Image 1 (cartoon, rainbow, N blue to C red):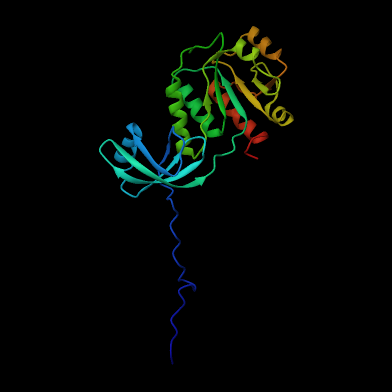
Image 2 (cartoon, one colour):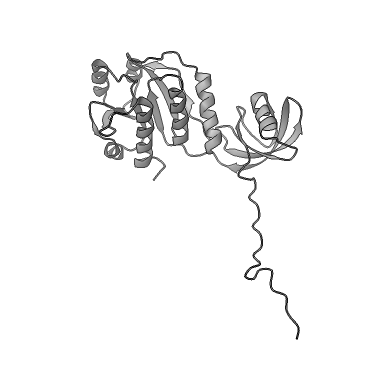
Length: 261
């Protein structure tokens, strides 16, 4: 009696899955120039990263984003000792929709301010505004270094947008020029409305105001409370360090009215 060979698609003969393309391990890079199909030259530290760390070879994929046009797929075309050329082949994703949230925070010591801007980027903040207060211990910031930290965070967490970073501004000037059309959630260590409820009651354009490690002084607190856009909020019964308070407040806003819903 003839025996029929088992089907390739029967039980126990499932066809192997097609590998994902590009692979999850594909490196991602932010580039300053607007991306379009064609050639992109990579040099400097980024070229060193691709060639020496990632061991890129001819034909290997690289994901690129510029913060404006989305994420693109490129293939390594020519590789030399100091630079390489990528050929952009297709768009993988459009630029993400970024919630309209700003973080206005007093600068912190090196290390903590680096952590703060990294996490703000990862959490989806659109703009970071360094704010100078009377108790601010750091008044000079290396904005290029902070932007580099944000770019690295965006590269690693899959963001297609990088928060904008403004020049430091003194608190009185910030409040003087602040419009009434953007809620200013003021993390008040002396008490305020429960943060989650206050944010849900005031959806729309917003900013979070976080003071320095020593907190706002009494005059500054009165100045903030007098602004019609300011809404005092409480971040719970425990005292939080400034960088922790910023991450907590941003997370609450994203959960209440942002894009975590």
